[in-house]
Image 1 (cartoon, rainbow, N blue to C red):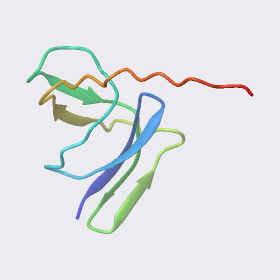
Image 2: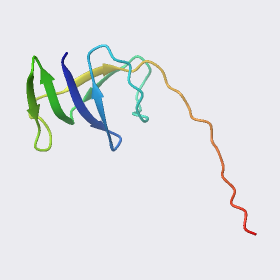
Image 3: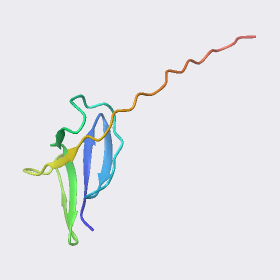
Length: 80
């Protein structure tokens, strides 16, 4: 099964074709195309390409599906 490792938002993700991936906010519109150019590794048919630091000439394309907003939370520290 082909896969790639991409970097976005300061994090690395292993992605495969057709996979649903939840990442940090990227901006843009819902249902828009997104291209990840920071591809760190690719694997297809047993052949692995490792970037130094990125694989030259390779991008990963995706389509944004939905935006979610995290609920704000607060933490209180009590001192005795």
